[in-house]
Image (cartoon, rainbow, N blue to C red; front, side):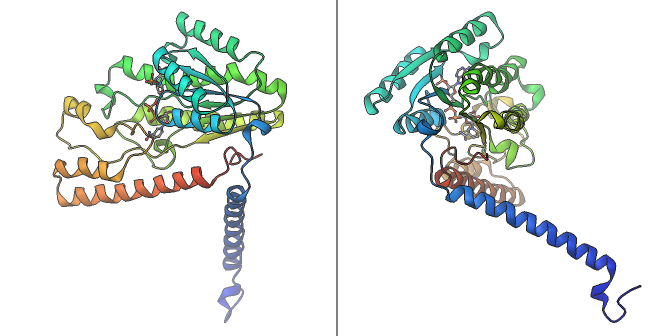
Length: 320
Ligand SMILES: NC(=O)c1ccc[n+]([C@@H]2O[C@H](COP(=O)([O-])OP(=O)(O)OC[C@H]3O[C@@H](n4cnc5c(N)ncnc54)[C@H](OP(=O)(O)O)[C@@H]3O)[C@@H](O)[C@H]2O)c1
């Protein structure tokens, strides 16, 4: 036993202290590297990656904002969606407000791996062929039908969710990547979800959360796979999901009808909206306190996500 009156010099203590110091240094270095990324000047994606961007689901919410932002930065757009009228609308809005070109590809992503889906993939490949596509935003995603136990959901609904959220995302990426590999540059932004990143579980949305976990892991693996080919990968968690529980006794029909369980269309779930739903539920005090805590965590996560999104240089966040 070393040390005696100097218990601090006990070997076990020294080993623990060294371990702690190494761990703390690693944490600090990681934090600093993230801060450096945040402080870096935004790069111009057109110059850095290429003149065109492909955006899936550009007809509403986050996808629409992404498409408009990319157009503002001077990128031409290939808009991939399932509704011809909405595609036409967004295409015209973009052309009117920004001096960029647009192309539309009609593609119901839920039909992936069916003859119509194969045909749509072929159209997408054709549309991007010969274009300098530098950015792909895999945004389209489905969280419907709503908050339900797995055994209550129609099989068709969660099969559709998996088709759109992971299968189609994979095929679209595979269709756009060859050109990027050929040019030795590109960026893929996959819109994930806070439901698989910011919270440990997301009950009643298990298939949705699992599908977004796929998106995160898929992106991480592709990042390693393609970094030597000049392609950046970025999985954007998106705003965290609504977390206020529904009344326990509500049946599937009530849960289907509940409005605030769906992710908000504008990519934000205002706290006021959550509160509105929470109050009429008339839960016991303890449950209410728990809801408030979760709401607080949700708001905190939203703020962090928003700050990352606002402060982080677009696409500069991907590490190369
Ligand atoms: N909003 C949130 O709070 C939140 C939170 C975390 C993650 N996210 C993720 O962010 C992404 C966008 O969410 P959002 O809230 O902006 O959704 P949104 O407003 O509902 O928009 C979804 C987009 O995807 C398209 N889409 C849906 N199903 C499709 C299909 N089968 N084929 C082709 N396009 C399809 C929609 O087209 P139509 O206009 O034709 O329906 C729409 O353009 C999703 O991946 C979502 O999971 C959102």
